[in-house]
Image (tube, rainbow, N blue to C red; front, side, top):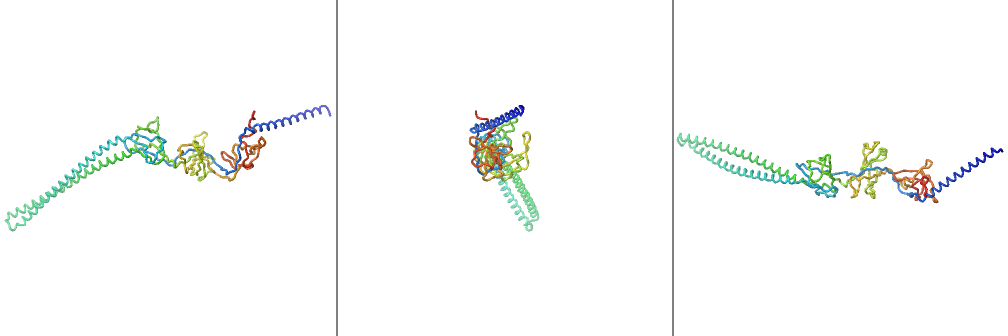
Length: 415
């Protein structure tokens, strides 16, 4: 063997020895790194329970039914008092009061006009009664004169011819006087009837004015149509300085002044992403969580899903579907407008082993978890059955096993 061959073999052996030493050092460093991070990694137990496959969406609470409070059909309205916004009221309690001084003054005037009309009508009725009695008396006298004249005319055969002609003339005059009296009685009756009818219409008009004013006074107070609280609407008459209605504002008839949501009909109005629309259906179970009350976990049912997608205002634009779930027993602390989340349950896996989503990692293209073992972490290959936003259902680990919530190889060692 030549000197050059021995030198080549020497260098080859030296390079191999250095490679072995480097690989061993890397393994030792990795083992030390894992062992040093063992005390700092967060852990979570794998648990056995029913696994819920869920789709998570966001939304807000809305009332399924609300009572709108409108200004009554009364001229010259001015708000005198408003129930404090957000204050609980009972059904029938006053929530809005209007200034009634002008209506009270009008009522006094209308009642005075009604009394005057009633007095005038009573006077006309009395006068008509007196006139009718006098007419009946005059008519009876005229009939009596006719009968007397007829009796005298019947004596024409036993009296002189001249006397008989005079009696017949007196009969004709009496009959004409009777006809005139009858016409006078009819004229008086017609005139009295017309005058009384006119005065009666005046009384009815005055009474209608009084009734209208009383109804307006009754509408000066708007009661609560249901149990809840009052939401005051904005007064757009103050544009551009729009603000909610308040005491002293003048309002027009029919204006929407306030709203009272029915708290017994609260529902979650959430947005389902377009990609998830085909996986949900009406009747699916849901679990509702409210941001302001995280301790509440409210089960419900998905009532309906909008048939049309809505274009969002985000950039890039997104499409989503509205999903509604009514709360069967809403908490008394809940209010419309509260933000929250809704988890739609699309499948249930009984007796599944579930781990937190943060405990699942990928190694060599396969899902693994890291189990605590002898001061370090051992990668265990698992099979994923289902996922939800927080947990993953897997097979390959036992219930109660502690899994790491961080990748040991990527955790900086403790110095």
